[in-house]
Image 1: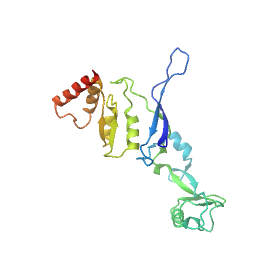
Image 2: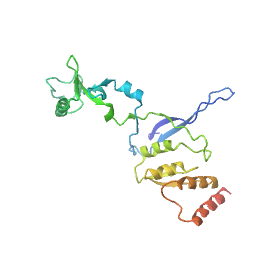
Image 3: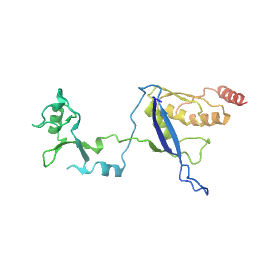
Image 4: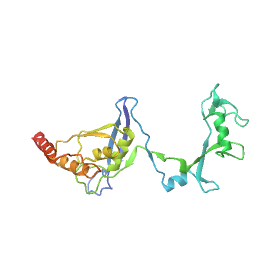
Length: 237
């Protein structure tokens, strides 16, 4: 359990209207584990919506850029070091320290990135257009295709997010039940190596068709593809 990271709720379809006792099932539960205590982690971000920007960046400067301000100090005192020296004649509040060294604070102030309140309280200016977006949370809405080519086909953007976050270009992505090949196609387009496994002949056909729609051809000859189909049929038996 020490390598368990998250359980993620994924909204997979539109609300149901079944005539039965119980709640409609519109979600999947994704369990996120890592192999080690230091896994690959590429922080995922999503773009701010117009409402997000209005709420999170309520101020506007003379150029019309939306921004907010944040404290320039953080919890915890430091007796030594560059984050506990006077800045513009003031020390950080009791029990806190500057978030960075005083030289950086002074440069921010010269660049107009420190906003001073009427009472002389300094705060750091943060512009909306300089932020990558908001951190991805543990409820995702990636609805599956309405008319899938394979019964368990997933939303490609869902796989893109998982692969981008938990692997690097050149990493190997393994899908032991590759189905329609959505994971393999995402891995290929994100410059990852991949291995896909499935016993179903239908799955192999669906995967092949999906991969043939990418920029490269993965099957060098028809006989090789026929061998893969035959192997799948024999394994099923």
